[in-house]
Image (cartoon, rainbow, N blue to C red; front, side):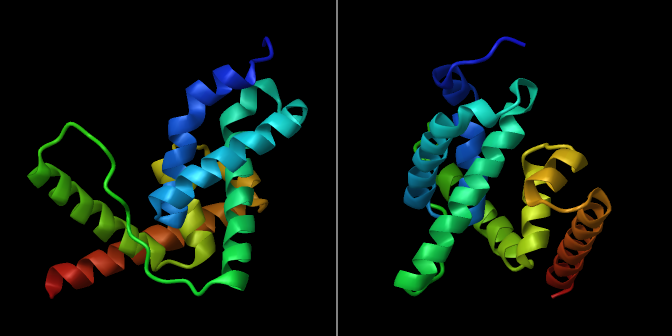
Length: 166
């Protein structure tokens, strides 16, 4: 496969990287900053990337940038509840509010999971990575990844059942 330029990679994967990062940090501005940091790091280390595995590699770089930012933020400022910001769209205000409420509910439910389970469900179910690619990003064995994903889904099902019965 012919080596892609960073510009082509950026245009192909910027939306995926942004969606992944906003799923992790739940803050529009922080996600934008982390996207910039991700592609800066990608520029510096593009030679380490295998041509056919660009998306998993970029998501790995994004995750590492998120972790670095999260550690730095934890040392400097207290953390609070962060919510999705309104993204510009052509929808009506009512549709935007309903969509934001849905994503807030989903985000709240997923953010209540332990970090490893949250990471597993975001990588596989939201970003369509294979089990192996997601396990590689998380630096765990495939069998451990499957267990984390199963437990995350089970926990989400239980939470849904509790809210449906309430």
